[in-house]
Amino acid sequence: MFQIYKEHKGFWKQIFLLAKNELIKTYKGAVIGPFWAVIKPAFTLFVYWFAFTVGIKDLGAVDVFVDGEFINTFDRFTFMLVGFIPWFFISDSITLGAKSIRLNRQFVTKVSFPVSTIVTFTSMARLYVHFLLAAIMYLYVALISGVGVSIYNLQFFLYCPLMFLFFVMLAWSTAPMSAFSADFENMIVSIMSGIFWVSGVIYSSYDFTSGFLKYLMLLNPINFFANGYRNAFLYERWFFEYPLELIIFGIEFVVVFALGIFNYNRLRKRLPDVL
Image 1 (spheres, one colour):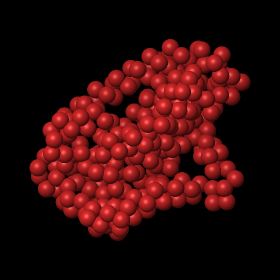
Image 2: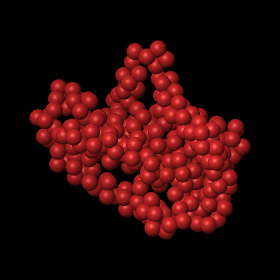
Image 3: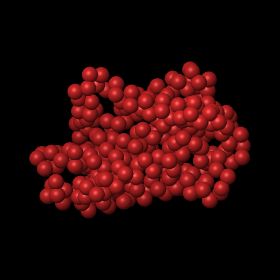
Image 4: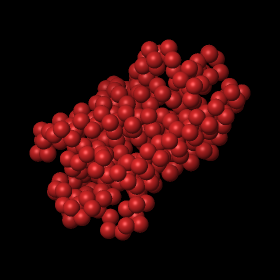
């Protein structure tokens, strides 16, 4: 951890600048440029809205129960919107985080640049987009959907930093391993669509009648953030009202942190030769 801290110390200005350049590079050559950061997720949401409200008409509204207690009824678009906002960040953080070192190999092979900061500025670029999408989501939930504003919304400032840190630490493991093996990178990209369907993004894992499945879903950190954003913006419940969910995530946070440090330090010095 001290090695990673040293690599970040004094480089924050460059990290913020490179995160900005990462976004510019992503949408370079497009007429509307960064607006694609909003258009792409908006189209995805439209497809799911059409499928679940027009195509499958029986799935119009969502009745939410938590531990048998009725919370509220939400229209499906609002329910899915709040779950999709963290998913867009998480999906990009996992896939682009795994590719980050290989795609920015010039920082490893041609200049003396702290390798761990590559993962940080790649995820930070997606965080900028996340802030924009979260602001649009909040305006919709607060002003259009009828849910309104509440003090529970402040939990965003807990879940968002936790989400950023968790997937940066995950990329400390996946990015060096992907640089060593293209198969590992391809495996991550391939399983992302499957992970989506078992992550509680378009449904509430709190509603599961099977106790085994309900507890199994608690092991999925993506489900933790999907539930967390809905707790903050829809359910009006505090994070500490789910102690088991919080404890499991805390354990996973420590494990991912330790594995990230171990894998990064194990592979860091060999990266220039491999790339």
